[in-house]
Image (cartoon, rainbow, N blue to C red; front, side, top):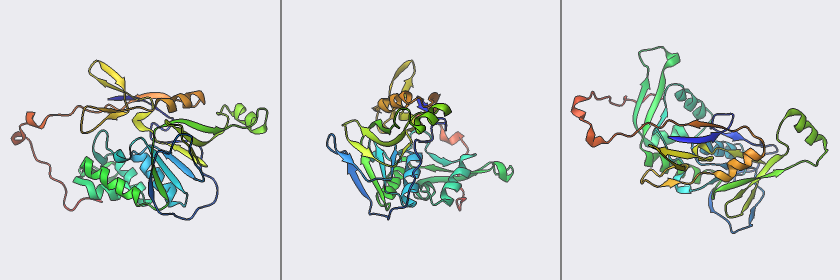
Length: 287
């Protein structure tokens, strides 16, 4: 399992600065690679850091509202990667997926493409505790999500590791600085990010959806090492985001530590499937 830093919203998403201002017309989607050192990407409304469930939905929602949006991730080919349990929905979360879908979000459509088993949980109980759950093929889900984002109007994908925030701090002694100090809030507003190669990306809003990568640590038995998560096809790990965690601490933003509690994997060769009861997918799948 992973230990990692999380924000007050329990590791889902940290909104550093809410986008304010008018809407911008949709522009064709395109995928960017990390720019040369000291290059600056300007004139962007929203920067989303992280390409997991929260990051994909946040970036699509911002672009859908008319904001020129850039999603920054360490590796574009792992956008939509299902790190732990390869499923969408379940008890409680199934309701959230339906709400995201009602807002024209992505994961409901993507799981329709990648789902391999659909079931309504707790069917013997009342509607309040029932939950739709879909098991997914990891590769199909990741590929389908990437296709959705690459074709999304007004959204760009940028491959880089974010190591620091660009913060516009008010002048010392100003009314804004005094108000922040009195409220116990960090002074300043995020207006961009700095990547590992020194590139600077500017925006009116910065949304952090770092998941397990924010100063992440992986524990295997008695051994521990810094990591964001394991690579699904090997024993290698993806590096954690340590610089960004240090920045949040320096800004006096609240940080805590949780574990994901990822369950152990079972070897299929060790299971006698003839002694188990099959649980087929529901036909037709519940919406």
